[in-house]
Length: 128
Image 1: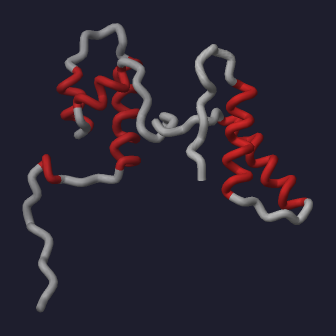
Image 2 (image 1 turned 90 degrees about the horizontal axis):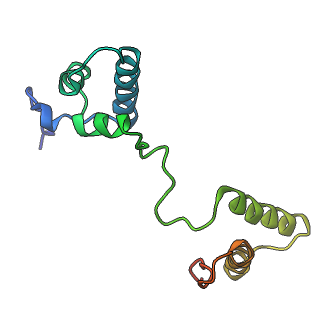
């Protein structure tokens, strides 16, 4: 059986571009809008000119970060706390001890407990 050929015509709503390419276009549009801040601009027209979603352009203009810039929703450790866990793993590696999941989660939970200041219970990473 021969493979299906790609359709000759693709509707704009069916067009798929890599996320990074669309983000580059959005950043270019934001830059051009900010450069012309003294003029009243039609954001929908700018979005059409750059062939980008108007909702994402509007979100960037309001200060929302892109998915690439945001921290994941299920992360409990800050960047510094993650670095501390990595340093702990490096120490274990240096002394020739292989890290077990229980050791890593215990380390992360201890770091979270020390960094916790509110009266609520400290957050915990999932137990292995």
